[in-house]
Length: 153
Image 1 (cartoon, rainbow, N blue to C red):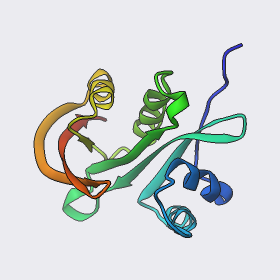
Image 2 (cartoon, one colour):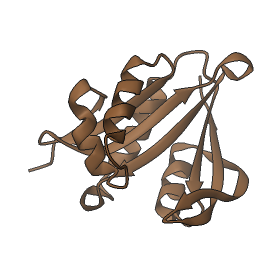
Image 3 (cartoon, one colour):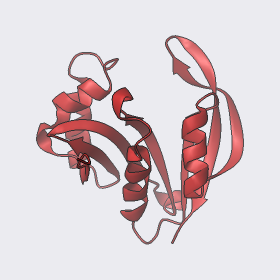
């Protein structure tokens, strides 16, 4: 039997599941981020859900002012045991589908050593436009990021 995956927007009670996807978030950080997203007009979070469990996540943030034609994707994650099943693609596609008409370019940073994610973004039509040395802090170490973009609408 094929596993049923639902892609949906964040709900008020998602903080516990969010903290399981991001175990490095300490204290009530997941609850704070959930509340912030629910209040925001610029930020959305989408989840992949299976058997009432959050198994994937992506966040989008809309630009403002001179950057109101831009949006940025953040924090794509799929539970380790669910990777390689197309869930990341579904999350990205849902985030792109939900972009308002004024959004023309979507950008994303990905760790330079994350080959599966880079390949996924390329398959969806993202292209590299830059490289940011020491762009992320992972386990106390600075790592390089690839900057990617996709033109839409």
